[in-house]
Length: 430
Image (cartoon, rainbow, N blue to C red; front, side, top):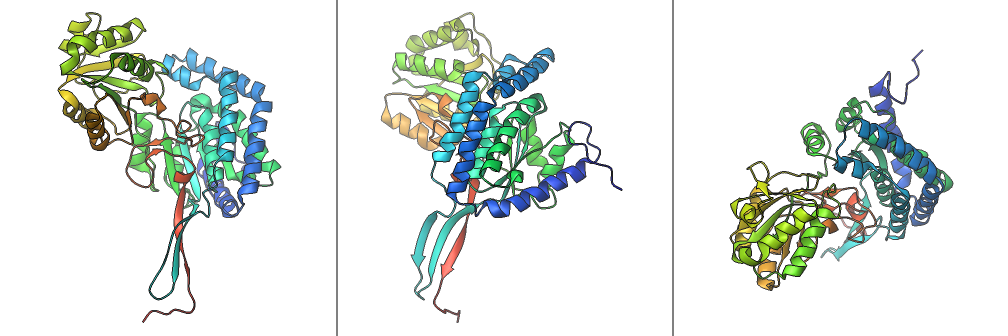
């Protein structure tokens, strides 16, 4: 007789546990893709309500996670990503409701045309199938990912970070409650019930062909492992080495407002600016106000010689600073030769995530927007808008920095594929 599986830390048969999760997800995905908008929306509404009702349990679980992480010496940026309060829990529920109110992409007619032989060809959106999501400390990803995948008709396997496992379990319980209330299979959203890191390897191997795509959301080491080991397609969410370039035609007041927000609103998010680039033509007027503003706000500035000359409190930047994602109150700063110099620097050191230009010169703005090869490029706006909610997607699973299938915020529409439907009247091929 086979020994029963342990479903929390200390799993005795991890491979068997994960294969079982994969089989259940595949079975759930078959019906979910045909569930219809009304039932999916009913489930999402019930999920949001359950999150609100369970707020005290979610906060209590998160407090345990937070205390453990703090005791283990986690950074302030990490703790900010991990921490939940009443407002953040309310925001998680609201994000689920926004996803509920989005148009259902499944079955949407993308394009239709008639061939000379009279056949009609239609391209329609369909679910991806089973989506495996591997993420680190953000508890809200549990709800965001589950809701987005459900709306797009996908079954989901969630593998949250070990640091947030209590928070994830509490949120996941609310999601399952919503599925149950709508009469949808509870296996449609599964949370891997172990902190054993070997579970990630099992997911990357595809769970006997039951995982259709993997979405990693976390640090550089996690994403690198996923890309190196995955045997299924990956939507890569690389680190956010985001830049703000202040052009010679930038309004100084606007530049100060954008730079301060881009860096200091929340330093631990992937859309936080990590490098400030300033046009050499406005060093005399713009550099010192920008650098001093950041330092006065509590941000460490690491700069080149011009930056250090502008404010002696700035530290020396090394070559390692330019490609670094600090996720903290630290920024690298450099003087460049105009918009082309900024583009060249971003191409060399950036991560193709999010980059911004501040300028009143439309020609310079257009050049930057056209030539910077990043998933998100902005003109006269903060890089902190790199967020699916701010795009009107309700939530996001991550910011895809690759070029295949999905790029930028991965929302409901990006979690679908398509198929062709052909309608004929007896045509045969000669």
